[in-house]
Amino acid sequence: MTKTIQLDDNFGKYSGLTLHEMISSDKIQNRIKEMAAEISRDYKGKSPIMIGVLNGSFIFFADLIREMDVQAEVDFIKISSYANETRTSGTVRLLKDISCDITGRDVIVIEDIIDSGLSIDFLRRRLQDSQASSVKFAALLIKDYTQLNFDIDYIGFTIPDKFVVGYGLDLAQKMRNLKAIYYLNQEGHK
Ligand code: IMP
Ligand code: MG
Image (tube, rainbow, N blue to C red; front, side, top):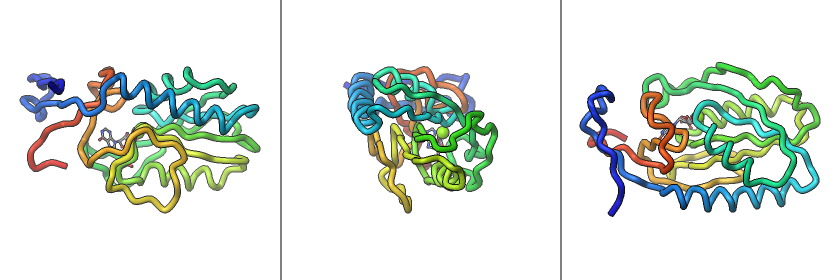
């Protein structure tokens, strides 16, 4: 039986809706081990800087780096593209820039999920102008309808176009602490 979570009155307009488990904690952890092994092979003997995209990637990032066996450095960037909670606003704002110098460095951008692709495209364009020696992208999730004009180097799971929460991803800033990934069952909503 699939696991569900009923949203109570604390969830305002979402109260009464149900979250259904989409990807179990075990599946996430197994896939992350595979991704970490692949990244470790690709960066053997190198010292990449991994840039986590806040807030959603923080749990994925922490689990991924602990499964890797290369000496990576970490930094963070914070952007915002969602005007309300479940739909992209169409514009991306930089809320916090990286603080390290990436000149001549191998950079890996760590994203939680790629939906419209606006955020990752914004990051790609920003990093393109830097003097990094290489830039790659890792995302735990990508939606099956997403169209990009560049490749994502490491992808965890391709998922249907549903709003998902848990494992770092939020529903109105909550639910990030769920160990599995759930989708929001909301009639008439994407
Ligand atoms: P994009 O710019 O539309 O690709 O969306 C990227 C960002 O929006 C992600 O990094 C997430 O922070 C957030 N986001 C997109 N889809 C979802 C979702 O289904 N659940 C939670 N956050 C999401
Ligand atoms: Mg994000």
